[in-house]
Image (cartoon, rainbow, N blue to C red):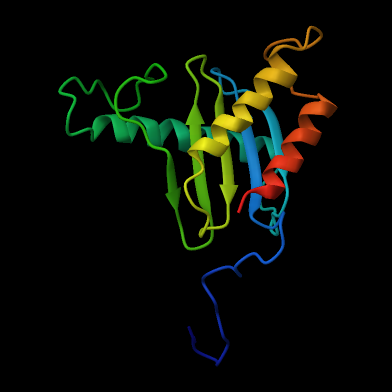
Length: 169
């Protein structure tokens, strides 16, 4: 696409060529909106401080969950827009895509929210998010020294997560 002044603007990012370039970032939130984990792999631009970024992402998820529940064409009991829903209640969304990224989302029955932001050409990541949740259960939840609700500091979890996320295509 060409704009005034002759500068060339490409609205789509380059397709990843090497493994590890597909995932941009990942968030893990608990049911109260506390960010337990934030990881970056390929995030070229930092626009906000981490606390603002986490609040913005959680707010986006809250709004999208509320909107999808309100627009559910099947369920007659839609509740009020903005009222939190229980995990698994009503209509839910799994992902959305823009021209520069794809956001994939999974919420567990315990209220853990896993968000993975990747290249827009990445396929369906529902099974990948389930696998990541399995890593979380194995390395974090089953860890006797982990205090629920505190940030995740497990090196074993971080290593396994890095290896797996870099393999996603």
